[in-house]
Structures are given as structure tokens and as C-alpha cells.
Length: 505
Image 1 (cartoon, rainbow, N blue to C red):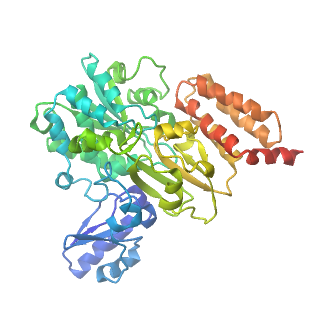
Image 2: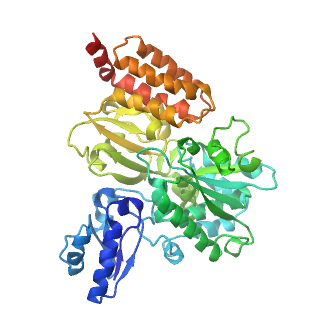
Image 3: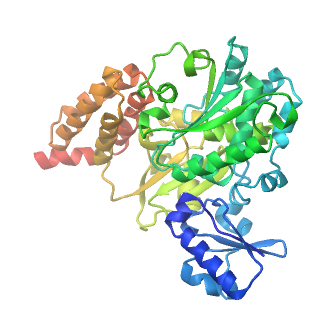
């Protein structure tokens, strides 16, 4: 009998370690032949700690489980949720990037390979570098970190650049509110990220990779570091990847907690030991990146998706999605919802279906008022736009962005003026200070919104002009995208701003 208890940070925060300890003690006390496996999470956070018991080839789920439930669990009297794959939230997903997450022991190479791992890398090792880049291009994979830039174009630029050394940098500085997919994959299936980075290195001619992880992710840092050590010891990394004669190695670097280091050039400065501030472009990182060398900078999800593209083929992956939004997107559902967690699905699902059906509406039971999509720099989407399909261009046409695909739900008690002020204040606190529109504009933005709150009728026009300047003049997305939440709040929820004028009068 195998008993699975997640080691994911969210599950641990909800008591998974205590459950695992209670299980170990009870198994020993009863003299049972049972192995306790610390897997990743299946992504249904409201059910954590979600314990699975495998007996006779079937895994039955129980959750949320407490340490006090352990005797009943082993007695067989605790109510079961049935097989995880039959839980409605999970059954409706299309899991490609997260196919193994929660299913395997994250640090078992044998478990990883038994569930399809390394098939993509072995196929890539039989291809020429140009063919590898062409496969990624044909898949339609776009950057999952926020910008949605075509991954194949970035790889092609680095592959064709001439240099004595090239690098693969994985951006794991997941700082957006309501996002946790990068952490989940690193804690639950780290070898898929290693495999994806190795394929990227072989395809572009890079021999060294770095995973830049935010310091607030100690569990992800621990698991990734150990997975890299295991991969190196087993020949997956090193001077001859899987005995191919092609070299690729990698290591983990820890960030110091600056939100702006999620921007690729700030991240590169930080990796080099410099202050994390934005670089002006050009030159592009693909030509002059880390230590002045050609560098691929991709998000965790982008690189972790590469193995399935090579395992199943570019055409298979590109068949999912809508328009130019190809494949699947792991959507992270948070905020005031009944069913928060990770939901991987093909692009195209309407936002309203995600919020009302998949997430089950608000946890408070009150009506939904707004959903912020894309982190603290994302627009607030009103209920009237809930028919918008989840896709890059579709959201852009509505004045929004997908970003890292985190959605945060608010009910009708939220004050949207306060949310707009928070966006400006967040930008002011996190600005690297390199450019004036972001550094000064965000401070003036807080002041201007305070003037609106005090009943100044002219301040709304001033706020619009200020947002235009920040959007057009900022060096990076921090200042450039802060107008998205501010202006969407002002445009879609004018009553929350008008009430201040009425109160002042």
C-alpha cells in the first residue's frame, strides 16, 4: 500500500506535515506494510491536505484530512472522494504541462520516467538544433510569464547568434498576487523543468542554465536543488546529456525579493550580482543577456511545457487553443472563491465559466463584482465581460492581459477606488527607480486618487493623463502596465469613484 501526502507548500501550510507524521506513527504502531510518498499537489487547494491511498492499482482520495482523521483513514471508515480523476474540478481539465504533478514522487527519476518523462529529451537529442527550434516554433508556444512572446522566435534568435557561450535562464521569480503555478511545478514535478531547459540548451547551443527562484519559495528552492543534484548524478545533466555527447548543466540562484526582478533584464542584473534595475532595450537579452552573452529567458511554465511538445509533437500541442493562443494554460484561481486552485485547460474557455462554474462563485456567497486577471498589473474585468474567451488577443481587445494567468475574484463589497489606489501604491513601492514615469508617476498616482477620494472633480482627468504617460513612457511593464488595473477600475466601476464626489458635495 502506498499513501500519498503532498509536500507542496500550500498543503504544508494547511497541515500536510502533521498528517504525514501522524500516518507514519500509526502505520508503525499497527505494523502495516505501507510506504508514505510525499508527492506534489493535485492543485485543488480547498481539499488540502489531499491524501491518496493506492491499493490494488487504484488511488482513492480523501480530503481535507487532519491528523485526527488518520486512524479512521487507516480503518477504512473515513469518507472517500473517490478517484482524483473523477473529482469534477479535476476531470474537466486538460493536463499537459501538469500531467505528472501530484501523480509522482517529485524526486524519483524512475517515477518520472515511468510517466513519460525524458521521452521528449531523447527525441530532441536525435534532432539537429535547427529542427528543435522549428518544432517549438510550430507548436505555437508563447511565453507563459506574461508577455506572450513566441518562444520559437526567442530561441531562434539565440541559436543564430554568434558567441563563445550562451545561457538558458528560467524566470521563477513568481511575484504576482494570485499566482502559484511555477511553485507547484517546481515542487511537484521538477524534472520536467530540468528536461525542458536541457532541450532549450541543446536547441540553441547553450551549455549552462540558471533557475532564478524568489527567496519566498524555500520549498521550491530545496526541491529544485535536490532534483538538479539527482539529475547530474544520473547523467541527465553534465558534459554528456544522457550519453549524447552534448553538454548542459544548470543551477539554482535565489532572488532577494524584488518584484521588479520578474522583468527579464532586472533579473539578469540580479543574476550578475548587480542591483535589480531595468536595462534599456536594445540590446535584447537574446543577443546580449547574461554576462553580455546571448540568453534565452523563459518562464517556468514555458520551459516545463517543452517536454510534452517533443513527446507528443508540435501538431498535437498546437491543436489545442484558439487563434494565436495555442496549447493549454494553467490558470490559477484565487481570491474570494469556493474552489481555489490550479485549473489547466486549453485556451478559449470563457472567463465567466471559470469563475462561476469551475471556481463555484464566491466563497462569501455574495455576487461577483470584478475579477483581476494577470496579477497586480492586470485589469479588473467586470461581469459584463465574462463572455471573453481566455486568450491573449481576446483579452487585449478588452483592455486586459492574461499575464501569468492568475485570476483573483472579488465580491460586491470591494471598493474599486481602493483597489486602484493599491495598484499605484504597489508600483511606487516596487519601482526600481530607473525611469521617471514609473518612479514619480506612481507616487503622483496615489496622490491623485486620494484627491478623487476627497471629492476633487478634476482629478479623474488628471489620473487618465498620468496613466497615459506611465503606459507610453515607462521602461518596463511595471510602470507600463500599472494603468491597466487603475483605468479599468475607473472605466468599469465609475460609481465607486463618483460616490466620493457626492460625499464631498
